[in-house]
Image (cartoon, rainbow, N blue to C red):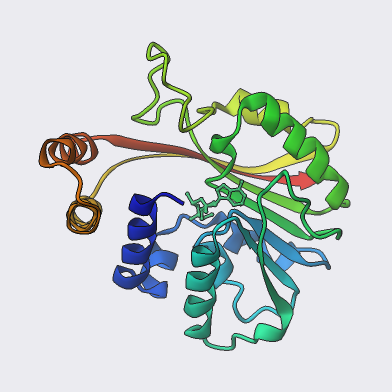
Length: 243
Ligand SMILES: C[S@@+](CC[C@H](N)C(=O)[O-])C[C@H]1O[C@@H](n2cnc3c(N)ncnc32)[C@H](O)[C@@H]1O
């Protein structure tokens, strides 16, 4: 992880309580909890997963997967503050997905929240095809991705897909989840302007980056201008159910 992201996640951990991040997360899984079938849950690229925090009292076996140990440590510290948390049914695995295979199981729920946009559309197709082998009838797959309306998406820019490899539309999701195998049971497009709180957080983060990383002032001013401008976050959230 680059130093600026280390600082970002550390600040996120210290500034935002579990309650805050759970309330802030648009979480349609709550509506389907009662119909989650038997079998473990896995969150791939979990970070400090607000979605997993809501399963802290669950008796299911839960795998939290991330390629950064710091993020797994932050998540486990957050879980220790959750009521009814029992560590015995949790596994925190540092793993570089999809190059390293996830544990061989049939999962009841697979969470891919804010991770697929780091892969090309073709790679996402391969990932979902492969992940289908870890599901059975009734398994749910939760997807959250940046949409093509996300503020950073500019197809005219030759460097558009250097960081985020793909910005999704609904057809992309329908194409990677083949209709004969999956039913889409939930879809939402969230468009939102950053709140003052969001902007304050980003400003504090950049101040920390300046303080700790010795970034030239003009570079940081550009970063601030870019990050703090009035921009529109835009994400697609979908839940697919294996037929
Ligand atoms: C943007 S955060 C999303 C965190 C969380 N899923 C959420 O939606 O709030 C992306 C997370 O995925 C992890 N990550 C990125 N690439 C990964 C990979 N190839 N394998 C596993 N984890 C990855 C990052 O370390 C980071 O914690």
